[in-house]
Image (cartoon, rainbow over all chains, first blue to last red; front, top):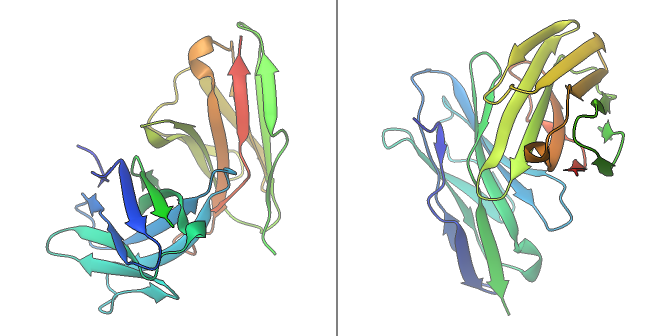
Length: 113
Length: 112
């Protein structure tokens, strides 16, 4: 079974609107971490946001927030007030106990002016 | 500022060659990782290492080996390169159970 599933290969959003990128995960660990990364066309991976499995509040970092629904095993990324520079690939990832990281297949986001 | 450095940004090699990809980190991180990234497949873990001389197979270790003789350096070796190993290779590091991984800029490897 896939550890991380991102079902949206491509998404479009109008500039200044909000967008939600979906991520579901599969683990039997009680302690795990969920991450989102951005990869612009230049290729570097940029860490965006982290959510620990025991964190009760949803993580937020500026315009990024993580909508964590533990019972549904989902960790969706919400980008508010989209900007042209947000156009990139976005990867959801999970770290389980034992320090293995699992990545999803990514969502390509295009922000339309 | 944290730094993960991969020795080459672009590399072209021939089928059958032995290929070395080098990765160095300056953060004193215990964990180091090698991934390959292919369109539509995301990042797939090849090998990771949680300490000097320690290594664990990831999801796709076939055709690869690794070496970690020093904490800061983690090398990926293609024993006999094949065209299906043409890919983007990403190195990363992290503290155990700690902050997220830090990535190098990637090596785009082409096997002809």
